[in-house]
Every structure is written in C-alpha cells, then in structure tokens.
Amino acid sequence: RELVAVADNILKNKVDSSKLLSESLQNNLIDTLRKRKIDISDRGIKRAGFRTLLRSESPAAIVEVGFLTNKKEAKRLNKDWYRKLLAQSISNGISEYIKMKI
Image (tube, rainbow, N blue to C red; front, side, top):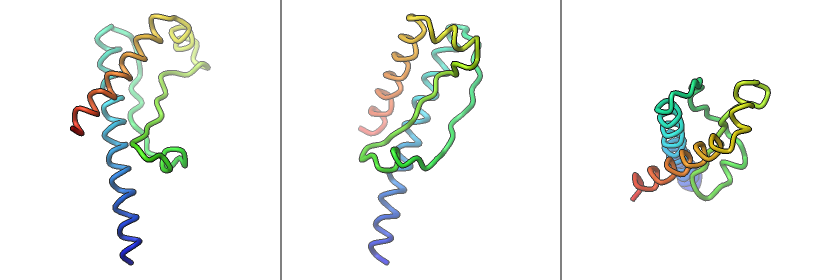
C-alpha cells in the first residue's frame, strides 16, 4: 500500500506540474496572438494520458499551434514570421513556468 501511495503521489505531482506548464504555454500563445490581432480560436487545454508525457521525468506538454487541413492556419504556418512568433511565445511560456517553480 505504501508503494502505491508513493507512486500515486509522484504521478500526481508530475500531472500537476505538466498542467501548470500547459497553462503557461497556452496563456502565452493566446495573449501573444491576440495582441497582434491574429484571429485564432482558443481550443483550451486537454488532458490525455499519452505515454510519452507520463514517462517523461520532467513536466511535459504537447503544443498544437494550428492545423494544416485548415487553409487559413496552413497559410499562416507557412510564414516565417508567424512560426518565429509561435516559437518565441512557447519559449516565453516555458520561462514563465520556470519562474513559477523557482
């Protein structure tokens, strides 16, 4: 029972940290794009038990920044300035997450 409790606690801490990271990434992406008046749809944060995320020793998140099947999004994703904006926003989200944890 103790081992199960310890394992549950470790998993809960990892899930909580990953949720905090996801929120930081999401907030940065949405704020950055809306400040630039870029029409986007906020699809929120989804939880899923992807093995790649659960097996990670550090907080983890999967970031979807658009869909190539959406012509409007595909057009934006094809532009260098837009990809750089997304990358900077993701970097800022990671930095903010680290500041919260320190």
